[in-house]
Image (cartoon, rainbow, N blue to C red; front, side, top):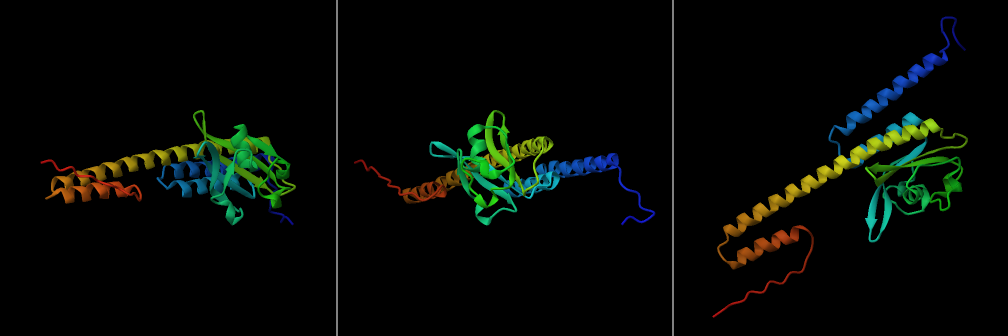
Length: 231
């Protein structure tokens, strides 16, 4: 019941409140992208923000990975999803992520069960929406949301999710650039340390040890070194 001093909120006031709420969430997402947070926590934050703004019940973000000659989508962020969903990999055409990977475009369905190969049959009656995360012309990830029946996603929801996908693309690309630069720095540091050890080596054995230590940093290897002695 409304008190005699309470005024009902008009539609224009509600629209204004929604715009302010939307701007606040998007501003916080933009701020998190530039904060230097690691990739997975950052993508989880972007996903949670999208779920809140669009008022979905669950969602995932996945990265496109190369597995031999085929591509898959690996889930790296999940909101209100079964535990086994995190880290799951979907091949082309499998599940919502695989469908978006195969078609390369947004998919919006009022019933998840209408997918050719759904991976979570318990969510068959949920509405779903999935969009590709692109960097340039290349699909680098997947962004998907779901909603319990009878809720349905609108065209505006689709546009909002595509905006979040752009933010996710920036976050993924920034993380990839940082990882690549960090790997390059690590490699340069290793080469410098190895050259220092070789330069200070007293005999051939110490040179070989320094070289093998450098090789072993990249993994486990079996190495054979042959020394030729000439008369």
